[in-house]
Image (cartoon, rainbow, N blue to C red; front, side):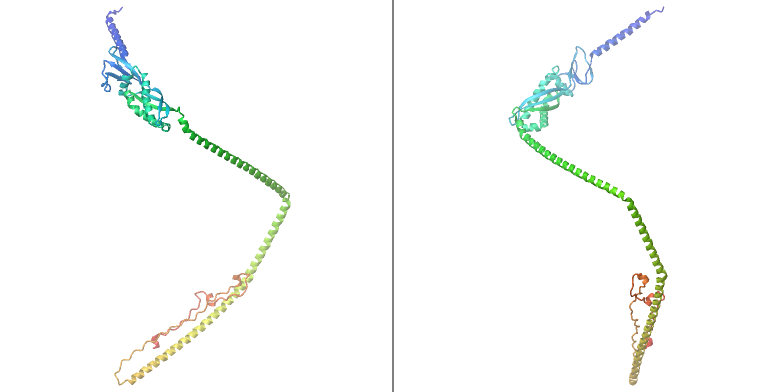
Length: 430
């Protein structure tokens, strides 16, 4: 059997260390205090205050974390940071001297900043129920002061403005108490004198009158709508009766037409046959007329047109030849007269020269050039248009036709040009 006496000192040392650790753990757990999220720990005794509390009593404020508190040397107490509510019911007198009772509610809490917690701890630590009466007194005084400077009408219309004024006026005092106002609501405004009811009576009467007028108007409109609906129903019934009558008449007409459908179809068929036969007869007559037009009338018109064209051409040629001969005779007469005149002038000049032979012979002046004989254009003849033949005017037109001109009927390349007339220049005339 092994000897265990050598392990006894080691076991004793381990057990002793474990006891010491357990004792230290238990002591620390008893001395370690942790603040809840809605509370603050106020530690006083053997400690140093924070920067925010050194001006006053020497204590420590712990929020949201833990702190080691030595029993007998330090004391720790909690200060709740939850919301608190105070009901207000204050009797006030307005600027008009009218007594009113204001009912409201104030929701407040201790501020989260260390100065607010320090002020609240100095005043309400261990006496937090007294905060309600303090807050009531503060708001009662300021509420009476603010309402005393307002009329009843302003209080009714501007409740938010009144609440903000009360909060701003009480802010400094609430800060000294370490409190912060989250909300101030005016719930009700009572009027023991009946002033508010008297103010409302004209408006109530006006509203009642407008309501009666509106009701009467609605009733009249409803009656008109009902009358219109009745008229529309009557019209619809009348239209329905007319449609039924028309439908019945159409049905009877359809029956009569169905009864007469057989004879009417036969008559229609016979009518179509007659129409087709008439069309065929017209087409045959047109064909015969076209055949006569092609075989008889057009060749006759062509022969007549050829004869007229030849006659007109011969006539135009004769006229042109006669005009050319007359013009030639005229030009020859003019040339002979000019030649005789020039010969007479030459003889006179020679006689004058012979008479003055004893004088210094002078240089004979050259004869002035004679005037150029300009050929006169042939007389213009009016243009004669070709006569329309029966084929152009159509079979239905008759009467005198115009004979086409011989010259206009020729092509441009075959038309006779005007005869070349000799020009009598001054050179050979001299």
